[in-house]
Length: 327
Ligand SMILES: [Zn+2]
Image (spheres, rainbow, N blue to C red):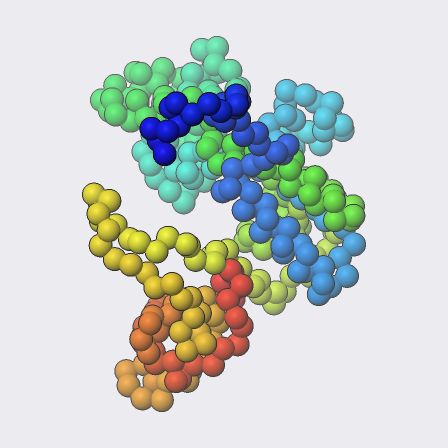
C-alpha cells in the first residue's frame, strides 16, 4: 500500500496538518472540569431548594481597586476595603509565613522590601509579609544589607516578590467563563471580590471557614446570618476512573493490566456504603466510600482511615457519581 501510494495518480488533497481549530471559549480540560463541577452543583441544588439569585466571588484579590478608584465608587469605602485585598493577596502569595524567618501563625505586617523612606513604592511587587520583629529589625535598611548573612533567603525573597501568584492565573482564566455560564441559568448573578467577602465576614463577626466565607460573598449579604449549628456537606470531585488499562514501570515497560470491568459483585469504586462488620479487628458499623478489588476484599475509606472489608458486610446507600461526600 505504501509503495503504491508513491506512483498512484490521485487528486490533490489539501494538507491535513495543523488544521484543527478550537471552539470559541475553549478551556484546557483541567479548567473546564472546575467550571463543569460548579455548573453541576448549581443545577443539583436548584432542584432541591428555591434558589432565586447567585453570588459569585469573581476574584480573590481585586487589585483593580487601587489603580482605578472609579471602579469601587464610594471613596471612603475604598480605603477600608483595599487594605483587605492587598493583605489577602500577600497572605496567599507568601504562604502565611514571614518572608524573612518563616515563622507561621503570628500577626503579620506588610513589609516594604525597598523602604518607603528610601523611595520604595506601594506596588505589590515591592511588598512582602513579615512578622513584627523582622519588620522592626530590618527597619529601613536595604534588603541586601539586612540579609547579607543569608544569601539563599535573599535570593528566594527577591524571586518570590517578582513572581505573580500562580493560582490567581487559573482563577483569571475561568472566572468570566464561569460568570457567563452562571448567567445562562437565567438567575440574576451578583459579583463580589475576595476582599469584600472577608470584609463582610469580619464586620459580622463570623469565624473563618470555607463554608461561612461562601455565605458572605457579595454585597447582598444580609446583616444577620444564622449560621449556628450549620454543618457543611463536603463534596469532592473524584472523577469516574480512567480508561488507561495498562500500567507501566518508570521506563514505560508494561508491567500490570487493569481489568476491563468496572463492577464486581454489583459494587463499583466510589460507591457510598454502610458496612456492618460483625467480627474481627474492625467489628462495628461504618459509612464510607469503597474502592473495589476483583476479589471479595474491598477497601473502605471512612473518617480518614481505610481498611479491607468483605462485600457481604456492605450495603450501598449511594451509587458512585464522580463525587465524594463527607461531613
Ligand atoms: Zn520574621
